[in-house]
Image (tube, rainbow, N blue to C red; front, side, top):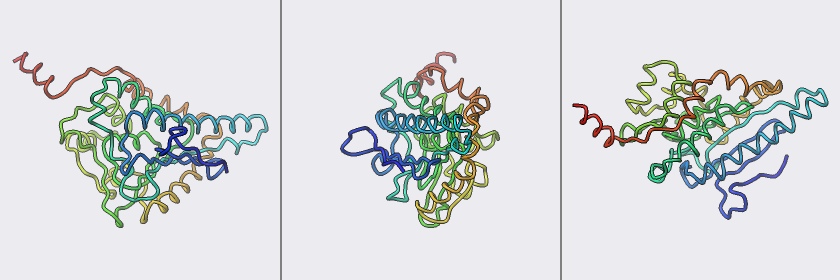
Length: 274
């Protein structure tokens, strides 16, 4: 198929590679350092443009399907995977120290990316080939399906660990968790206990859809099988429209401007009321 596209465009060291191994399959490989920290430039100059390019190519194909009455041309699926040359990290979360310095990081950078993935017009699959923490876990939750290594070759965890280092959740995290995880006990376990889920625990609790015994290549192969199964569901053109309705409340909450707060600010407010 077409040659790989790397992002940022014209960068000496690409942070992301977009490939299209089949007419109805796109793969985004995250390549930002060893652990794929979701920093501002990585999101704005690599992830978002890559998502735009996937949709642009799929819509051109879908339009052709309408003209020729060849419905299968409208098939499509997207896989997001961590670096293919390692098996340790999918994403280790945000570049937290810099993110908290920018009051616009969540409303203008990270939340729009989550919403974009959540409402993407074709099936999205997170191929979790290593640790998946904090913002990385949120990115995977925004996807439609999650496949992960079973951890037999290397220990891997899923975790929202903000409660352990004193970071309040942005509105988008809470909204996405409520939209994707219905059981309040599991919400508590993820958000308030900061539980480190093994792949087996995450599968049992419904966070994951499948586990794979193997390394990144094996996880990608399993993700491609899942993509082949559901890519025809994109052909009618309503996959994204249905998700817009399914996650209407989540999208609305994620679009709100946050009230800037912290443990110190909250403590001062609480003391003033005592």
